[in-house]
Length: 246
Length: 306
Image (cartoon, rainbow over all chains, first blue to last red; front, side, top):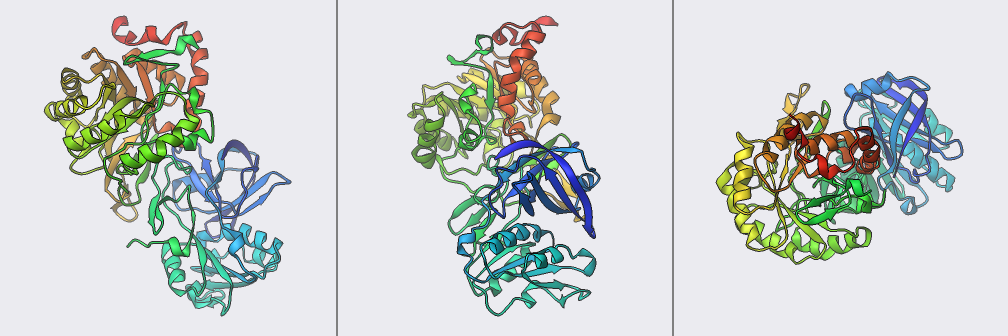
């Protein structure tokens, strides 16, 4: 974990309500896909946790992709190139790529898609045959599809309204065979994946956080292996650990 | 550094800065980030007789200059704290620690305090009779002078360590409760715990927090906390620990002028994990600017000055 000042190199609209934010600063603590950073915004008390979409250790730069959902993300979207932000980096456990097997499947929904890009990049670097299924509500909200294709992944996009790609949910478009899955997205999607998936896999969970580094117990969840803090022992959990609470 | 030290119930603190319970875990998350031995001490996560998961999520809501939490005393229970957390803490913290205790009955409080009394590293027992986030316990003991005094007597009968009662601001007359605690034998008073608050999501029309209400804390509550510290410090003769929205060296000095012997820093740790480190680092320069040689001289200064 490291707290530092980062300079905005890019903050641009890439889909309906979705922005790509590239920050230049000390990225040495960002080690694994699935980790997140926690951004302090002027005028807001709590930081905003955002998953790492990409990191370039050589250039000292980290990319996050966020959706405007409230006043905080709205204010973030108004910041321009050259402005600075205070950021805690290197938070959370991240995905375990050692369990991927030869043909890993990545399943992302909406605002849960970004961390899977860093994961796909890592898995491609390891020589894996990576399949990606991305779910969105509608065509205007689709993002990162080209970037996943550019990595050499096999990409399927679904939209709920059928305006782009396969009509339906990600679970309507899962490939027949895969060695392991990794997923991030809204809870109903995660539950559907949990029921449908044929192999072991890893889920990135979300909860409102106070601190983001394990101090406040604001984001605790029950698992089959005890109480866990989503920000600290998570956000990534194995399929076998998860207990869904209704 | 001599100018920063204060005496808290007979134990010397290098400085008056104490991370508050519930914002600092059992210390080691922060020990990985900075040397926590720079602290005066810290108050560990509120500990109960039995393990507790706490409340359902969401437990956190943002506010202007603060936040609401409804964690609900999640903790592994006193036995595991003694078996696992304290030995682990000993590796990274070499000072006396403040043990924060909560309960749902007088027997609970006495049971947990008696166990922690045997722990050498525990310097003080901070007894929480003010948690707003649990039903049938916590705050219900801290809202009447009689029940508050009953908890003091129950705890004092099982420990020789200094007992500091942590009070709730969600009462009509906090001074009456502080005085009752002192009369019953409390060695110190700490205040304030969080103010009961609420947020509603105007899009869904539902409370943001699953438990509906929670404890409001952060810089927004500082003036309320300061006022209560001032009132209580002028009514009791035991040491008072001031807390509530403290986020800077200047805030620490203001709390001490109001009558605090030591100052707890809570919510600030959550937005800046190095908050206490920065406050301790900044104190000497702020004192110099204000021509203060020793912090112990300024305690309660506001009442004397005017």
